[in-house]
Length: 85
Image 1 (spheres, one colour):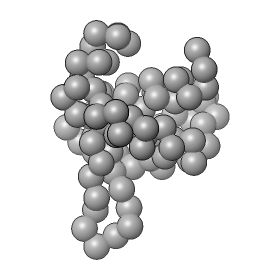
Image 2 (cartoon, helix red, strand yellow):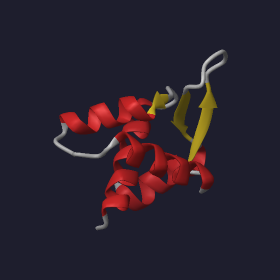
Image 3 (cartoon, rainbow, N blue to C red):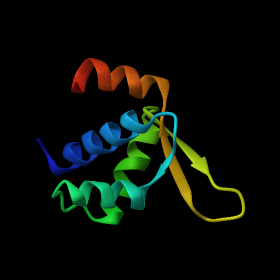
Image 4 (spheres, rainbow, N blue to C red):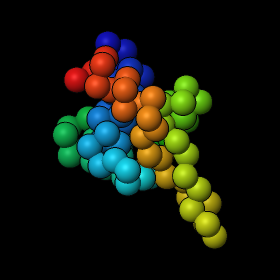
């Protein structure tokens, strides 16, 4: 499995576990680090944007900030349940 696919899988795993709560890319990266992954914040943001473009996760803008959160979208739940778990 490529590094990019590992990152995408971890993003979907974390967002699936806390649905419908939205998480930042930084939080996803910190939680992945606890599981001994060495994903950089830039990698997590890049792959989260990829998953958002694919329609598996949704972008959630925080009003009044430049921060962006991500939450799993319905197609992402189906994809996770059918392909990953």
